[in-house]
Image (tube, rainbow, N blue to C red; front, top):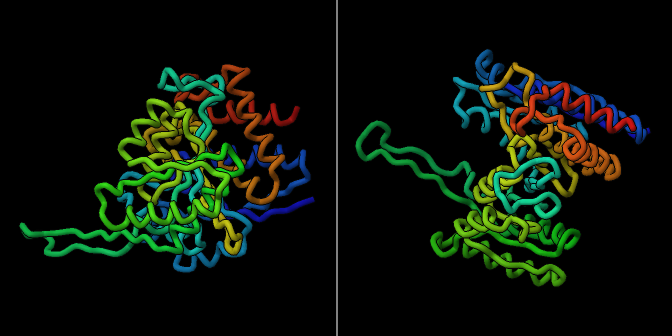
Length: 353
Protein backbone atom coordinates (compact mmCIF):
# COMPACT_ATOMS: atom_id res chain seq x y z
CA UNK A 1 0.00 0.00 0.00
CA UNK A 2 1.41 3.39 -1.04
CA UNK A 3 0.31 6.41 0.98
CA UNK A 4 0.56 10.02 -0.10
CA UNK A 5 0.00 13.20 1.90
CA UNK A 6 -1.76 15.83 -0.19
CA UNK A 7 -2.16 19.49 0.77
CA UNK A 8 -5.55 20.53 -0.58
CA UNK A 9 -6.47 24.17 -1.19
CA UNK A 10 -10.03 24.22 -2.59
CA UNK A 11 -9.85 28.02 -2.79
CA UNK A 12 -12.68 30.01 -4.28
CA UNK A 13 -15.80 29.58 -6.39
CA UNK A 14 -16.04 26.32 -8.29
CA UNK A 15 -12.73 25.23 -6.81
CA UNK A 16 -14.73 24.13 -3.79
CA UNK A 17 -17.02 22.07 -6.04
CA UNK A 18 -14.46 20.31 -8.23
CA UNK A 19 -12.04 19.44 -5.42
CA UNK A 20 -14.45 16.91 -3.81
CA UNK A 21 -14.77 15.32 -7.26
CA UNK A 22 -11.00 14.80 -7.25
CA UNK A 23 -11.23 13.06 -3.87
CA UNK A 24 -13.86 10.67 -5.22
CA UNK A 25 -11.85 9.78 -8.29
CA UNK A 26 -8.61 9.30 -6.38
CA UNK A 27 -10.38 7.07 -3.85
CA UNK A 28 -11.79 4.95 -6.67
CA UNK A 29 -8.55 4.54 -8.60
CA UNK A 30 -6.54 4.24 -5.40
CA UNK A 31 -8.59 1.26 -4.30
CA UNK A 32 -7.67 -0.53 -7.54
CA UNK A 33 -3.96 0.19 -7.24
CA UNK A 34 -3.30 0.00 -3.53
CA UNK A 35 -2.97 3.74 -3.06
CA UNK A 36 -4.08 5.81 -0.11
CA UNK A 37 -4.38 9.58 0.03
CA UNK A 38 -4.46 11.67 3.19
CA UNK A 39 -5.71 15.21 2.63
CA UNK A 40 -5.05 18.26 4.76
CA UNK A 41 -7.32 21.10 3.70
CA UNK A 42 -6.32 24.75 3.94
CA UNK A 43 -8.89 27.54 3.75
CA UNK A 44 -6.55 29.88 1.86
CA UNK A 45 -8.71 31.93 -0.45
CA UNK A 46 -10.13 35.33 -1.30
CA UNK A 47 -12.63 34.81 1.48
CA UNK A 48 -9.71 34.52 3.88
CA UNK A 49 -8.16 37.64 2.35
CA UNK A 50 -11.33 39.64 2.96
CA UNK A 51 -11.52 38.31 6.50
CA UNK A 52 -7.88 38.48 7.55
CA UNK A 53 -6.06 40.60 4.97
CA UNK A 54 -3.97 37.82 3.45
CA UNK A 55 -4.62 34.92 1.07
CA UNK A 56 -2.54 32.61 3.28
CA UNK A 57 -0.65 32.99 6.57
CA UNK A 58 2.94 34.25 6.64
CA UNK A 59 4.24 30.71 7.19
CA UNK A 60 1.97 29.24 4.52
CA UNK A 61 4.74 27.99 2.26
CA UNK A 62 6.52 26.34 5.19
CA UNK A 63 3.32 24.51 6.13
CA UNK A 64 3.26 22.90 2.67
CA UNK A 65 6.86 21.67 2.59
CA UNK A 66 6.27 18.25 4.08
CA UNK A 67 3.52 17.19 1.66
CA UNK A 68 3.98 14.94 -1.35
CA UNK A 69 1.94 17.27 -3.56
CA UNK A 70 -0.37 20.27 -3.47
CA UNK A 71 -3.78 20.31 -5.12
CA UNK A 72 -5.33 23.73 -5.80
CA UNK A 73 -8.97 24.11 -6.80
CA UNK A 74 -9.07 27.75 -7.94
CA UNK A 75 -8.45 31.28 -6.72
CA UNK A 76 -10.21 34.52 -7.49
CA UNK A 77 -13.38 36.30 -6.43
CA UNK A 78 -15.27 39.51 -7.22
CA UNK A 79 -14.04 42.31 -4.99
CA UNK A 80 -10.47 41.00 -4.79
CA UNK A 81 -8.17 42.15 -7.62
CA UNK A 82 -6.59 39.28 -9.52
CA UNK A 83 -3.07 40.45 -8.78
CA UNK A 84 -3.89 40.16 -5.07
CA UNK A 85 -5.24 36.63 -5.29
CA UNK A 86 -2.46 35.33 -7.57
CA UNK A 87 0.52 37.05 -5.97
CA UNK A 88 -0.81 36.26 -2.51
CA UNK A 89 -1.05 32.50 -3.01
CA UNK A 90 -0.37 30.79 -6.33
CA UNK A 91 2.77 32.57 -7.49
CA UNK A 92 4.61 32.49 -4.13
CA UNK A 93 4.06 28.71 -3.98
CA UNK A 94 5.33 28.22 -7.53
CA UNK A 95 8.48 30.22 -6.82
CA UNK A 96 9.27 28.98 -3.32
CA UNK A 97 9.06 25.37 -4.51
CA UNK A 98 10.94 26.04 -7.79
CA UNK A 99 8.03 24.77 -9.86
CA UNK A 100 9.63 26.07 -13.03
CA UNK A 101 7.70 23.83 -15.44
CA UNK A 102 4.04 24.50 -16.06
CA UNK A 103 2.73 21.52 -18.00
CA UNK A 104 -0.54 21.86 -19.90
CA UNK A 105 -1.70 18.99 -22.12
CA UNK A 106 -4.23 19.73 -24.87
CA UNK A 107 -6.35 16.99 -26.43
CA UNK A 108 -9.54 16.78 -28.45
CA UNK A 109 -11.55 13.90 -26.99
CA UNK A 110 -13.96 11.78 -28.97
CA UNK A 111 -17.43 13.03 -28.17
CA UNK A 112 -16.43 16.69 -27.78
CA UNK A 113 -16.97 19.02 -30.68
CA UNK A 114 -14.12 21.45 -31.11
CA UNK A 115 -15.15 24.88 -32.41
CA UNK A 116 -12.72 24.17 -35.26
CA UNK A 117 -14.15 22.07 -38.05
CA UNK A 118 -10.81 20.40 -38.79
CA UNK A 119 -9.96 19.56 -35.16
CA UNK A 120 -10.76 15.86 -34.86
CA UNK A 121 -10.43 13.49 -31.93
CA UNK A 122 -7.25 11.48 -32.07
CA UNK A 123 -5.47 14.06 -34.21
CA UNK A 124 -5.09 16.94 -31.73
CA UNK A 125 -2.80 15.91 -28.87
CA UNK A 126 -0.05 18.31 -27.86
CA UNK A 127 1.52 19.73 -24.70
CA UNK A 128 2.42 23.30 -23.83
CA UNK A 129 5.50 23.58 -21.63
CA UNK A 130 5.49 27.01 -20.02
CA UNK A 131 8.41 28.53 -18.14
CA UNK A 132 6.77 29.19 -14.82
CA UNK A 133 8.84 31.34 -12.46
CA UNK A 134 10.55 34.17 -14.35
CA UNK A 135 10.21 35.75 -17.81
CA UNK A 136 7.60 38.45 -18.19
CA UNK A 137 6.01 37.75 -14.79
CA UNK A 138 8.86 39.18 -12.74
CA UNK A 139 8.49 41.30 -9.63
CA UNK A 140 10.97 43.89 -10.87
CA UNK A 141 9.46 47.27 -11.71
CA UNK A 142 7.16 49.82 -10.20
CA UNK A 143 5.03 52.92 -10.58
CA UNK A 144 6.25 56.52 -10.63
CA UNK A 145 4.43 59.85 -10.42
CA UNK A 146 1.11 58.33 -9.48
CA UNK A 147 -1.82 60.55 -10.33
CA UNK A 148 0.16 63.01 -12.43
CA UNK A 149 -0.02 63.35 -16.22
CA UNK A 150 3.48 61.86 -16.54
CA UNK A 151 2.59 58.78 -14.44
CA UNK A 152 4.44 55.68 -15.60
CA UNK A 153 4.64 51.96 -14.94
CA UNK A 154 7.70 49.79 -15.55
CA UNK A 155 7.70 45.97 -15.64
CA UNK A 156 10.99 44.19 -16.30
CA UNK A 157 11.13 40.81 -18.02
CA UNK A 158 13.82 38.52 -16.60
CA UNK A 159 15.29 35.67 -18.66
CA UNK A 160 18.23 33.86 -17.05
CA UNK A 161 20.46 31.27 -18.69
CA UNK A 162 19.73 28.82 -15.88
CA UNK A 163 15.97 29.41 -15.98
CA UNK A 164 15.58 29.14 -19.74
CA UNK A 165 17.97 26.20 -20.12
CA UNK A 166 16.25 24.01 -17.55
CA UNK A 167 12.79 24.44 -19.04
CA UNK A 168 14.14 23.85 -22.55
CA UNK A 169 15.85 20.65 -21.46
CA UNK A 170 12.58 19.46 -19.92
CA UNK A 171 10.65 20.28 -23.10
CA UNK A 172 13.18 18.63 -25.42
CA UNK A 173 13.22 15.49 -23.26
CA UNK A 174 9.41 15.40 -23.24
CA UNK A 175 9.32 15.75 -27.03
CA UNK A 176 11.80 12.88 -27.27
CA UNK A 177 9.36 10.65 -25.35
CA UNK A 178 6.40 11.79 -27.45
CA UNK A 179 6.32 12.56 -31.17
CA UNK A 180 9.86 13.89 -31.45
CA UNK A 181 8.87 17.42 -32.47
CA UNK A 182 9.34 20.64 -30.50
CA UNK A 183 8.14 24.13 -31.41
CA UNK A 184 9.60 27.15 -29.65
CA UNK A 185 7.41 30.24 -29.25
CA UNK A 186 9.33 33.47 -29.77
CA UNK A 187 9.02 37.09 -30.88
CA UNK A 188 12.65 37.88 -31.49
CA UNK A 189 11.85 40.08 -34.48
CA UNK A 190 10.27 42.66 -32.19
CA UNK A 191 11.61 42.06 -28.67
CA UNK A 192 15.25 42.86 -29.11
CA UNK A 193 17.01 41.42 -26.04
CA UNK A 194 15.17 38.66 -24.20
CA UNK A 195 13.76 36.68 -27.09
CA UNK A 196 16.94 36.56 -29.23
CA UNK A 197 18.59 35.25 -26.04
CA UNK A 198 15.82 32.64 -25.76
CA UNK A 199 16.37 31.63 -29.42
CA UNK A 200 20.11 31.26 -28.88
CA UNK A 201 19.53 28.92 -25.95
CA UNK A 202 17.01 26.85 -27.94
CA UNK A 203 19.63 26.27 -30.64
CA UNK A 204 22.23 25.47 -28.00
CA UNK A 205 20.08 22.94 -26.14
CA UNK A 206 18.88 21.34 -29.39
CA UNK A 207 22.42 20.06 -29.94
CA UNK A 208 22.03 17.90 -26.83
CA UNK A 209 18.78 16.40 -28.18
CA UNK A 210 19.63 15.30 -31.74
CA UNK A 211 16.66 12.97 -31.91
CA UNK A 212 14.15 15.82 -31.63
CA UNK A 213 13.12 17.81 -34.69
CA UNK A 214 12.53 21.44 -33.75
CA UNK A 215 11.43 24.73 -35.19
CA UNK A 216 10.45 28.15 -33.91
CA UNK A 217 7.45 30.35 -34.58
CA UNK A 218 6.74 33.97 -33.78
CA UNK A 219 3.95 34.08 -31.23
CA UNK A 220 1.46 35.87 -33.49
CA UNK A 221 1.93 33.38 -36.33
CA UNK A 222 1.92 30.50 -33.86
CA UNK A 223 -1.48 31.51 -32.49
CA UNK A 224 -2.84 31.56 -36.05
CA UNK A 225 -1.39 28.13 -36.83
CA UNK A 226 -2.82 26.66 -33.60
CA UNK A 227 -6.24 27.59 -34.97
CA UNK A 228 -5.62 26.71 -38.62
CA UNK A 229 -3.67 23.46 -38.15
CA UNK A 230 -3.45 22.34 -34.50
CA UNK A 231 -2.65 18.73 -35.45
CA UNK A 232 0.85 19.75 -36.56
CA UNK A 233 2.05 20.37 -32.98
CA UNK A 234 3.54 17.96 -30.44
CA UNK A 235 5.39 19.91 -27.72
CA UNK A 236 5.33 23.72 -27.62
CA UNK A 237 7.72 25.50 -25.28
CA UNK A 238 7.35 29.15 -24.41
CA UNK A 239 8.10 31.86 -21.91
CA UNK A 240 5.85 32.54 -18.94
CA UNK A 241 3.58 34.91 -20.86
CA UNK A 242 3.59 33.09 -24.19
CA UNK A 243 2.98 29.71 -22.56
CA UNK A 244 0.08 31.13 -20.57
CA UNK A 245 -1.63 32.53 -23.66
CA UNK A 246 -0.99 29.49 -25.87
CA UNK A 247 -2.32 27.00 -23.34
CA UNK A 248 -5.61 28.85 -22.94
CA UNK A 249 -5.94 29.10 -26.71
CA UNK A 250 -5.25 25.37 -26.91
CA UNK A 251 -7.98 24.66 -24.36
CA UNK A 252 -10.44 26.59 -26.51
CA UNK A 253 -9.38 24.51 -29.52
CA UNK A 254 -10.07 21.38 -27.46
CA UNK A 255 -13.63 22.49 -26.78
CA UNK A 256 -13.69 24.09 -23.34
CA UNK A 257 -11.35 25.59 -20.80
CA UNK A 258 -13.31 23.52 -18.29
CA UNK A 259 -11.44 20.37 -19.33
CA UNK A 260 -7.93 21.87 -19.20
CA UNK A 261 -5.47 20.61 -16.56
CA UNK A 262 -2.10 21.89 -15.45
CA UNK A 263 0.86 20.77 -13.38
CA UNK A 264 3.34 23.10 -11.71
CA UNK A 265 6.36 20.83 -11.54
CA UNK A 266 9.60 20.80 -9.65
CA UNK A 267 11.18 18.12 -11.86
CA UNK A 268 14.01 17.44 -9.42
CA UNK A 269 11.41 16.59 -6.75
CA UNK A 270 13.25 18.59 -4.13
CA UNK A 271 9.97 20.34 -3.32
CA UNK A 272 6.30 19.40 -3.70
CA UNK A 273 4.70 20.06 -7.07
CA UNK A 274 1.24 21.63 -7.40
CA UNK A 275 -1.66 20.59 -9.61
CA UNK A 276 -4.63 22.74 -10.60
CA UNK A 277 -7.31 23.05 -13.29
CA UNK A 278 -6.87 26.00 -15.61
CA UNK A 279 -10.47 27.23 -15.51
CA UNK A 280 -10.26 29.55 -12.50
CA UNK A 281 -12.95 30.16 -9.93
CA UNK A 282 -15.79 30.95 -12.40
CA UNK A 283 -17.87 33.02 -9.95
CA UNK A 284 -20.70 33.29 -12.49
CA UNK A 285 -21.58 29.60 -12.02
CA UNK A 286 -20.23 28.97 -8.52
CA UNK A 287 -22.65 27.34 -6.11
CA UNK A 288 -24.88 25.86 -8.80
CA UNK A 289 -23.24 22.44 -8.96
CA UNK A 290 -22.75 22.55 -12.72
CA UNK A 291 -18.99 23.11 -12.99
CA UNK A 292 -17.08 20.76 -15.26
CA UNK A 293 -14.79 18.65 -13.01
CA UNK A 294 -12.70 17.33 -15.92
CA UNK A 295 -9.94 19.92 -15.60
CA UNK A 296 -9.52 19.12 -11.92
CA UNK A 297 -9.71 15.35 -12.45
CA UNK A 298 -7.21 15.46 -15.31
CA UNK A 299 -4.93 17.54 -13.08
CA UNK A 300 -5.23 14.80 -10.47
CA UNK A 301 -4.19 12.29 -13.14
CA UNK A 302 -1.09 14.38 -13.78
CA UNK A 303 -0.46 14.27 -10.04
CA UNK A 304 -0.73 10.48 -10.02
CA UNK A 305 1.82 10.25 -12.79
CA UNK A 306 4.20 12.61 -10.99
CA UNK A 307 3.86 10.58 -7.78
CA UNK A 308 4.99 7.46 -9.63
CA UNK A 309 1.70 5.83 -10.60
CA UNK A 310 1.45 6.06 -14.41
CA UNK A 311 -0.96 3.12 -14.70
CA UNK A 312 -3.43 4.73 -12.29
CA UNK A 313 -3.04 8.03 -14.13
CA UNK A 314 -3.80 6.36 -17.47
CA UNK A 315 -6.90 4.71 -16.00
CA UNK A 316 -8.28 8.09 -14.95
CA UNK A 317 -7.73 9.72 -18.35
CA UNK A 318 -9.04 6.57 -20.02
CA UNK A 319 -12.22 6.72 -17.93
CA UNK A 320 -12.70 10.37 -18.84
CA UNK A 321 -12.33 9.54 -22.52
CA UNK A 322 -14.77 6.64 -22.20
CA UNK A 323 -17.46 8.77 -20.54
CA UNK A 324 -17.23 11.31 -23.34
CA UNK A 325 -17.05 8.75 -26.17
CA UNK A 326 -19.66 6.28 -24.93
CA UNK A 327 -22.26 8.34 -23.07
CA UNK A 328 -24.05 11.65 -23.41
CA UNK A 329 -23.05 12.70 -19.89
CA UNK A 330 -21.80 16.25 -20.31
CA UNK A 331 -21.72 19.40 -18.25
CA UNK A 332 -23.21 22.58 -19.68
CA UNK A 333 -19.93 23.94 -21.07
CA UNK A 334 -19.80 20.87 -23.32
CA UNK A 335 -23.42 21.17 -24.43
CA UNK A 336 -24.94 18.81 -21.87
CA UNK A 337 -27.02 19.08 -18.72
CA UNK A 338 -25.12 16.90 -16.24
CA UNK A 339 -24.19 18.27 -12.86
CA UNK A 340 -20.69 18.10 -11.42
CA UNK A 341 -21.78 15.18 -9.25
CA UNK A 342 -23.43 13.31 -12.13
CA UNK A 343 -20.37 13.53 -14.36
CA UNK A 344 -18.09 12.50 -11.50
CA UNK A 345 -20.37 9.62 -10.60
CA UNK A 346 -20.34 8.28 -14.16
CA UNK A 347 -16.56 8.50 -14.29
CA UNK A 348 -16.19 6.71 -10.95
CA UNK A 349 -18.49 3.94 -12.18
CA UNK A 350 -16.22 3.50 -15.20
CA UNK A 351 -13.21 3.23 -12.93
CA UNK A 352 -14.95 0.55 -10.90
CA UNK A 353 -15.45 -1.76 -13.87
